[in-house]
Image (cartoon, rainbow, N blue to C red; front, top):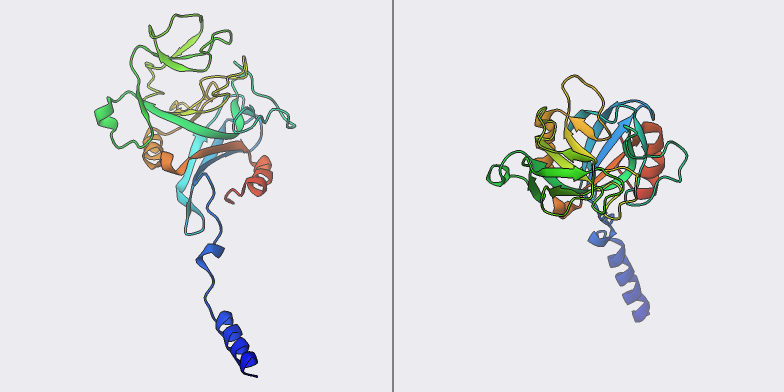
Length: 247
């Protein structure tokens, strides 16, 4: 009888214990997510939503950001996996489409000298007249940012990043088709400042300059930020599969 009484006392104590902290949802590997959606495959204007993992759930950061993607819309690209086997258009060099899929982010870049970009948490590339991104599909440094003269040239097509229109005044490198760049699968994909005329890009994702700077200030490599972009009707399947935030 004594042992039964002890058992019941222990059981009662267990029943009133608070839930263990370990029962909270496990934090995802990537705790900052940029979600870009467009109405369909062939539309350039879209929207960006920023999410941060906090207190066991996704929380939206700031307001919705208007963006412009490739002038011909989007197409499946190569990111955290090869998305090109999915139904829909496939990204290739020169198609004026932004890559759809899930992508890690690389360095931030800008025209400001490093001391004037100390607020940037991402690694920072100071763009000068020598800075270029290689678009030649036959080059051994295809889809790489480098300085002219830093390597023997084997290319005929480059994207010189110090532009007269200042579209690259602030930006972030998107790891599409990178680091193992597949020839002609698309190169030099950035987040950058948009053209005030509202024209679509050559394949990047663009936005207002102040919003681009605010985005760079928010991005933190400690949280392993991801870019998720695709037509809105494709997003629910990815949300379910990867545990991404709703919108």
